[in-house]
Image (tube, one colour):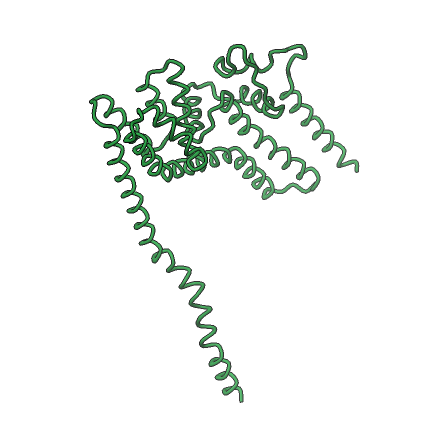
Length: 301
């Protein structure tokens, strides 16, 4: 008990220091969030309420975010590609990247104190857990970007077909986009939100070409970028946008068919190892097992 007491005191001091670091704010600060948010986060005359845990992550993210503006812009771009575009998404992201290593360090220190026997292997394992906690949000973010790109690639052909039908029915480009965004709200939610954001920008005074360019920049999707380029070229040269989108839709369907054929051709190669190491031994045991047992009984007799 006497040897455990100094360790518990050290743990208590560590917890107090971490709480002071996180909750170090003035009590009478009524504009706690507004003073730390970017001015574009909260609109004028609008109060945006967030949860208490988000406030903690925002404050911690502001403290731990890199001072390099290039790194911040790169992280903001990655978050935009993943679909996280709220005004405080950047601060929450860096807050999570700070909380996870601290939480992992706290758990590791607590485990080492309670165990009492600290060896080199446990220290290496603790270091690995802390580093994994720091890089885990980045890995999840890259996975979300890849998944979102795949979803956009799947949604584009059907969306373009409906957009072509609306254009050929006599609707203008913007009205066709509005119709498509309403009709495909459940079928293609990502593209529906992107088209809705396009209307918000154009109604706010942004030029149509610039709004389309912003849609291309917000998403790291070559397919959607190609559609935006086709629409911009049609507007610039005055060609029929419906026929241009129809040709591009057929091209995308052909590309999807080729990708499916490529994946189908790889199946035979990927099944070789499971067949050789899993199915074939079991088959040999079933076929040759009784014969081998009879031979063993024969030679034993």
